[in-house]
Length: 432
Image (cartoon, rainbow, N blue to C red; front, top):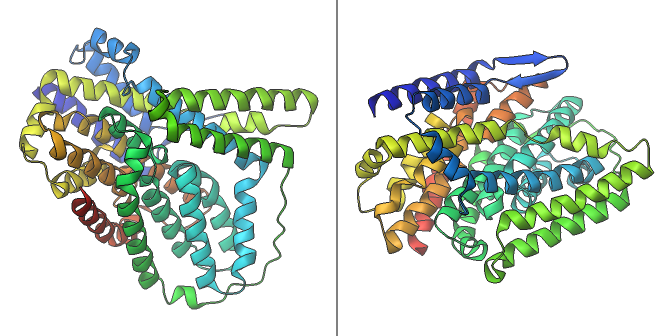
């Protein structure tokens, strides 16, 4: 157990440094982050040392279980493909530009509209998609209008990682924790909608207090045109996304697994996009969508899964579970998961925490699961290490020369995140 803990500890220290120092490998025009390579090396060491038996890991990959990591990756990537294709059509940029037009000359109005836009898009897509699509637009727009981008970036990041709690599909961590507990799409929404809304109101008020002076300055006038590149693609992709969401909602009642629903819809869109590509030589939307998919999450998630298997086999999970106690409270699991996400990232944290409350039963077990969901989402608010969204976000703003480094990220996001966390956990405590 000690050797496993040391190997995993070194892996996560290296992972943390990779996020703080931004090291990467550039092959041609492709830039590859080191975070997933570090995780992969750590997992391979555990496999080679037999701290994570290969047969146990393989059986986990082929088992017909809701928490099979391959199914969760299939769900996440297929939903991402649906959203990224819509973005390539111009849907997200169109909405962002419309937000600028609607807000007029007031920065406060602009901030409110952007915050609401981020919240709504996150609920129906995912936090990672919103971060990838709206962050570049915010950086570009603020630079051209000579306004401070920090209120909008903090607001966008906060909203994306708060409203991602509303639905299971909002974050891969939701999927893992909820499916491991056998929680259906509708059951999840019934519990998480109120904590999500309470957290959203809290963070919104805190951000307004933080940036009230900055938001009083009027932006410079900029002409904004709102156009959709292909209405046919937009309608088809949008309708398909709605159909996918409907079937995800009823999946628990018709006994269809969520990953299968999203994969089927993604395959239909893929066939449609191929036909469009063959009929229109200059159509590059499919290629750009496939390139933009977060492929690096595959080795990262699988590597983290190997680490969790090693923890279970070597008894580390049992020790942590015993430390948390046999009387789960919302605040115990919520706070510990929040902090843990910023030590090992929220994806492996969620995998680990799905195994911890196994000795609990009834309400205690459900409280532990939902509190861990809150911690896995809001854990993004403390450091960039807390979530994959944070890693992508800090990389994006750095590319656009926005001064929003590690220290500034912690300074602002912690001020927003800590009160938001306790409000969300308090509401969760009252309704379960």
